[in-house]
Length: 311
Image (tube, rainbow, N blue to C red; front, side, top):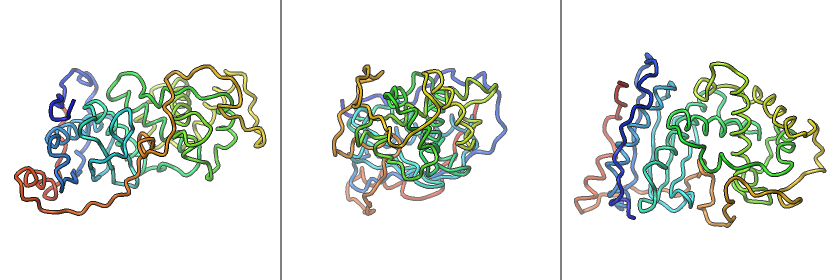
């Protein structure tokens, strides 16, 4: 079904109405839709409405920093969802989507995930070590559930393969870890393993601390979660010791099927990080002759939109 025929209208529900109000200033943010060739025109109004709604919902939990949201059409997306999000630096969120395939709920969940990552940038940042990456992704995944509910996203449901918890503990502080192997399946490790470990260790940490959630822990240093990883290992009878020569891969031993079916690994850019798809294409702004392009160009500048008041 094409995006123009799909219902993209923002939903209204009772989520959060009983939550105590937070006295916070509205975030100043700006939406940039790269649409010189009119690829986004069929869904521009819906993107704008959903983005405003998600920022408002996130503001009920986080003090969002000022930021720019860049949306482009492209094929560098998660094949299963038709969208990929990226928070490459402080104050920037980039989203790439396929207008003909992306579902409204996937846009919403991708943006909420990115908003948590955006906020963490102004604290400890994403981090450069394996442990820091596991915590950043785990917290963002839990924040999606905190704001929007529902089950964990598919990558967060991934059950780590045999031996990967022990590897994560041993390589926790290493900055030369392989991001593609741990998170994207570009190697011999199960695809999305890093997301699955991150989600589990944050869940274990939250189970041991009272009154905390993914929002309140947005600036928590990654090392505060190491004890949670040790508890996960102990629960599975894994010794808290790591021998670099004893690296266990998913294909080194028989292992039951994962909680979700692993997608095949390929060189297609669609196999990129579900929330960390870097954008490499530059977009040249142009003035189109047709009326659709003129409508699209209204987002090229002007005063930054402000999020609506909670109420």
